[in-house]
Amino acid sequence: MYEAVVGLEIHLALDTESKIFSAAKADSFGEAPNVNIDPISLGLPGTLPVVNERVIDKAIMFSLAVNCDVPDTMQFHRKHYFYPDLPKNYQISQYDRPVGEHGFIVLENGKRIGITRCHIEEDAGKSVHPTYADYSLVDLNRTGAPLIEMVTEPDIRTGDEAREFLTKVRAIAQALGVSRANPEEGKMRADVNISVHLPDQPFGTKVEVKNLNSFQSVERAIEFEQKRQTRLIEAGGAVQQSTLGWDEGGQKTYLMRVKEGEADYRYFPEPDMPPIVISQEWLAKVCSETPELPDAKLERYLALGVRDDDAKLIAYNVDVATVFDAAISTYADNPQALANWLNSDIQGWLNGSGQSWQESSLQPAHLASLVKMIDAGAISGRTAKDILPEVMTGRAPEQLVEERGLKQMTDTSAIAKIVDEIINANPKIAANVAENPKAINALLGQVMKASKGKAKPDVVRALLQEKLGVVDAV
Ligand code: ADP
Ligand code: MG
Image (tube, rainbow, N blue to C red; front, side):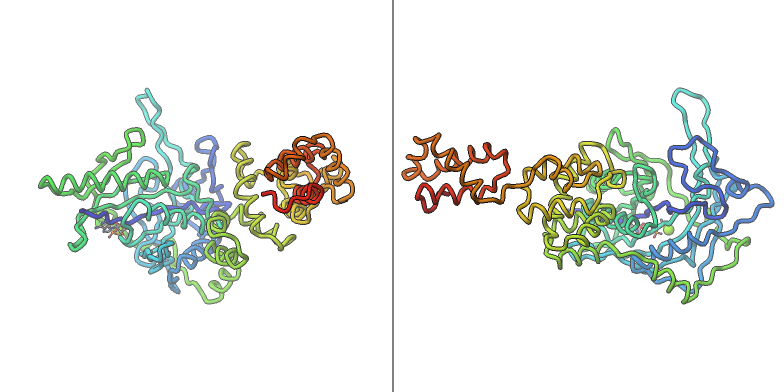
């Protein structure tokens, strides 16, 4: 059985105000074409790049987070190629002195995926090919936007592993605030290198599938290529080193070009920029600004007793983790209940309303007090669910409970009065309970209804049992 061998090249758009070498705005998502451009990003003659220090900070932070060594000196190189959306005819990138090298990320099964290097580079513009038009257009907004490119060792073997790796990279980038890393906005793109071999044989010839913009396409492309290459080899053919595209509609790869060699790029050191020395003080400053990483969050949540699957959902989504952390800081007694609310009812409400965590008006302290009131027996879980939609719009649960008189009845004598009324009104059922203990549930339901859901069910059950002389009615 031929096994797939996969290495990824991942581009992350850095989340900075300005571009990598000029003051033009970096993020143009959703904007009109060619509005965020300036002489430097256009590469006009006579302009000189000045590096944005925040780009270096973020690239160092990310490199360290994925266990890379950050050298004391790094350098920019020019990578030459002609393309209509690359006005300078070269891209300022890094080559043999990148910001990070020799890193790794550990998958859940304990497997280490090696990271060859992380380098900083500028993005190119975008060619637009309008349908039914006999011309193409160029949008240079993205030109000079800062990117990190991360290259992995060929350590990945399956589509599943690739997806898990990408999910981790996204979670890390988001937790650090380095990149929004959402493929939908083009802030995370992956090229996938794939070959197949028999496990005891040397690696085969690889192909590169370009610019996959969803994790699912990455997974599918790997599965597709594994089958295609296996069939080709088994039929006596050979894989040709080439660059492929992914046809989303047809769910298959197609040939774009036979791969160019590295020599074609004529890399040389960027003469307009000196090598950048990264001092120990600079590294220390970046370390001190580095937020908690998803794996560390996961460990912390597990130590609080949160179930594994819930802890993961929260730890790997920085927006949820932010709410969770704020909620446990106001109410630390029941982290699992807070996690349940976040992962089920609240996530469900957000899905239904099409809101993101960032857009929602939920106050973490409100979630905390909701759970606290349930734990204290002040409101029922049912009541909490009923008021959740309003809590999601920013209203305080205590206030809603107060206004509407939703507090549970804690006064046993008041509940006992209702229990008596229901027993008297249903003599037949009451008489039947001794023989059929389950009949008590019918009475319980009626008491709950009569109390408008405010009586505590376990108190009601105990009172019914006591009054009807039943020991265990379950
Ligand atoms: P190239 O010279 O074609 O750029 P590199 O050796 O720089 O190739 O590797 C580019 C990417 O391809 C890396 O992610 C690497 O892990 C991956 N890769 C290298 N060899 C193979 C292989 N035989 N099969 C699959 N992926 C590979
Ligand atoms: Mg290479």
